[in-house]
Amino acid sequence: MKRIGIMSDTHGYRELIDAVVEITADEELDMWLHAGDFGDDARYLQTLIDIPVYAVRGNTDCEQPLEPREQLIPLEDTYIYMTHGHEVSYYNRVQELLYLGRAMGARLVVAGHTHHHGQVEQDGCTFVNPGSLALPRDLSGGTFSIVTYDNGHFSVEFCYIQELMK
Image (cartoon, rainbow, N blue to C red; front, side, top):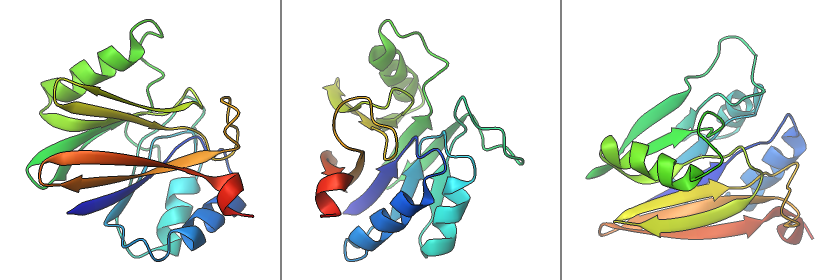
């Protein structure tokens, strides 16, 4: 079993990253993913924890050195495909991202950009957008997700930062 923390679109609000690290301290996560629009936030996250942090560049990222546009991350018997998602059409966005991920052998596809959290299951592949911690556009108050991979199956939990900080 593997547990993966996922965040995106933090836009420099490091106090929210601090809160997420504190909230998830007992979660026994194996890695964190940051799906872009972070400036230096993913590198900052790495200084707070002792597990790997994988990150991709978003449409507002310009800090040098730039993160890659996409990553293919090994996970047990499959892969995670991660990109920020701003380079695909808004029409059929999730289907395009799922297609790209499946074409690379991934069964988990992660993207941000929209600031809306959500999950889609399609043809044995799971798509996750963790939403935005800092600037949500979905009235959620800010979200991140924890994905568990166990016996070939993904389960996704969305965490609402404003509720957890009360």
